[in-house]
Length: 353
Image (cartoon, rainbow, N blue to C red; front, side):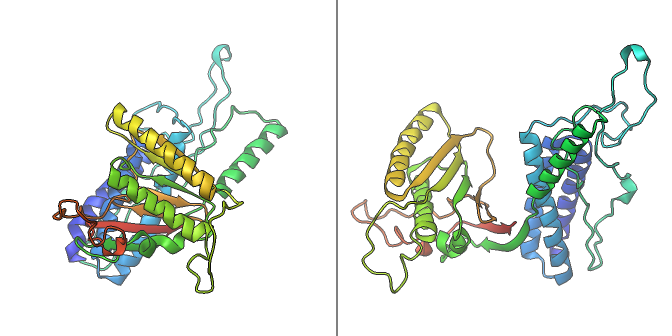
């Protein structure tokens, strides 16, 4: 663990601060800290040689990643933690005080959150042993926001049903595989890396802030082509499959893209490109393509309806820029075969619900 000690210590500090902010209701700050801490832990996982430490890292990475995904939903729903009544109070305490005077009495609103552990319960990372102890995160989910207290059976039944539904939909994610792509390496096409993870899907959601330039759009089209061969025309590469004619499938497939732009002009140009792409893939392959632009997007991932989540360190654009030394007179080797394209250094992590 000597080679990763500093990296683990830095990540430990970030995760510890994330957990504290999480328990204090600072969800946006906590999410950012979890994300930064996870990046360090994932890097450490690829360098670590100790089997015991590797096992611990995998368990904790899954825990932190699940909590980060849960916080995204909490933030998306606009949940705001109740304010603290004193600087020393944790906002996750269920505070019970004597009712105020009748003139301004209001029924208390229960807050379903555990007490934050004191600092003494945070264990430092050992530097001279094979053991690794990392902070734990809160396991509660404040969504949906509890309604005002009402002892009627109808309201209690509603709360119970809603909580049960929430627990069923918040499935945990398990880290299936993690690959570090070395700078200059080949053999890393989309099909090689995660093609089999698309099989069985009826929709995918792509988040990548860099689907802007021509070659980045080409990368996205390559992903669509992979979807067509893996999810729509699944027998296309079968040795017994001959003379298949292009016919519009009866079953729809859905692709949602969230990306970003640098200017309004670039957004207008992309809208025209996406409109043409949308029309083609709907008419020929029955693919419903929706897109949106976000100025705050950072994550790069592909979420599949079959439960796989593919985290792309550099997004879809992890191939090196080709050296154009032929004055554009002909297409270079590797132009159409991604497995022959040299790559930039990045990480590809695959999770499964």
